[in-house]
Length: 387
Image (tube, rainbow, N blue to C red; front, top):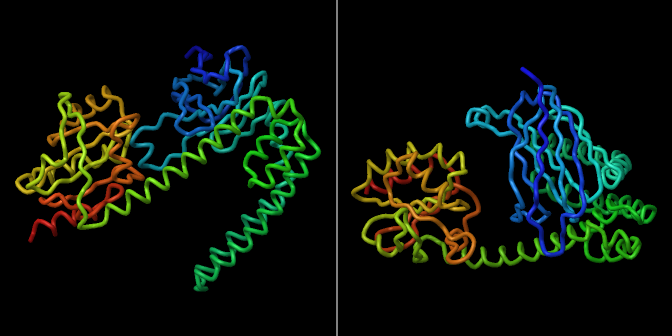
C-alpha cells in the first residue's frame, strides 16, 4: 500500500475573544496505531465546549500532522475509534490530550501506551516541572500501594483512609511548594500560569502576582477563565442535583414532563399513568445502552400488559436518535431530551450516568432508580411483577 500522510485543517468556531490569526501545529509519530481511524476533537478547557470534531488519518508508520488556526488556548483530543469488540476485550486505545497554544509547535513521539510531547511554549516547561516532581510522585505511588497492601492484610480500612488523607494533605502542600518555586523562577512561562490556575485561591493570588503581564494576558488566560466558569457551573449543578435528589426518594411523585416523540408530537409522563412505567435514559452514542436493548426488548414483551417503557434519548441529535431507534427497532415509546434549552429531564431526574432506569408505579410514584446496565434491574422487575 502506498504510504499517505493526511493533514487535517480545522477552522475552529471561536469565542468572541478569539481569532484565527495565529497557527499552531502538532506533528507526531506513534507506533502501533495499525492504521486505525483517529478521532479528533478541538475544545477549550470547558468540558461541554466542543469546537469541532473530525477524523485524522495516519501513515502506515504512524506519522500524522495537524494544524490549528486559533489565538486561544485549546485542548486537542486524539483517540482511536474503538469497536464494541475492542471495548469488551478492554483493548487500550490511544487517548492523547494535546495543549496547543498560538505559535507553538508540538511534537509527539512514542507508542500507543507510552508517548512524550515537546514544545517551546508549553511542554518543555511541563517536562521540567515533572522532573522536579518525580521524587514525590514516586513517593505518592509507593504510599498508595502500601496502604492498599495493609488493607488486604486486614487492617482497618477507615483508619487507613484517614491516615492517607492526612498524608495526602501534607504531600499536596509539598507539591504546591515545588510548583510555586518554579513559577517564581519562570514568570514568563505559559506553563507557570497553567499551574497557578489550579492552586487554591490564596496561593493562586500569590502566584499570579509573580507572573509577567505578557503571560497573564496571553492564551492561557482563556484557560483560566474557562476553569473559573467550569467551577461555577459545577457548583450550580451540585446544588441542582441535591435539590433533584431530595425529590426522588421511593414513594415520592415522579416529576412530570413533556417531550417530543419520534413523530414530533408532545408526550407527557402523566399520560402513561395506570401502568408501571420505566424511564430509560439512554443515547445512540452509549455502547452499554445499545448492548442492553435486546434484553430490554425481551422484558418489554414479557411484561407489556403491566409495564410501559419510555426511552429518553439524551445528548443526542434528532437525526442520530431517530436512526438508532429505527436500526434497533425499539418497540416502546421514545422521546428526546432537551439538553440545550427547554426541559432538561436528565437534570430533573439527577441522571449521572447512562443508561439510567427509573421505575414508576401506576399512580405515578417513584419505585426505584437503577444506574448502569445490570441484572439487578431485571431481577427487580421479575420480583415486582410476581406480586
